[in-house]
Length: 106
Image (cartoon, rainbow, N blue to C red; front, side, top):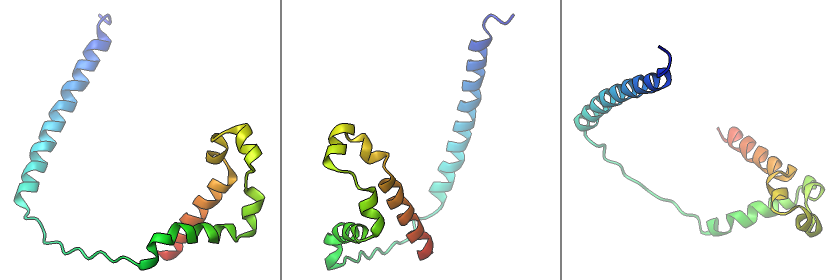
């Protein structure tokens, strides 16, 4: 009785998913065809100093007192390899700064 249970379960799940997908595709297809595309006017603004934005951000980060406390030396990098850059406190610090900056902007 339970010999082919896994195959039956897999078949039934696939059948259910296929039915739902076809129903959703049909519903969304009609929705997309019925709504006219809105007119979009795009205005891209570029600042002349945008080219140097990463350098400015790096210099601001380097000016903080925590930067030199969490920096890695070349000897440490040679010993650990690229893994040290991904798991460092500096990476977490930068991400926290970026997240807090965006929350303040909202």
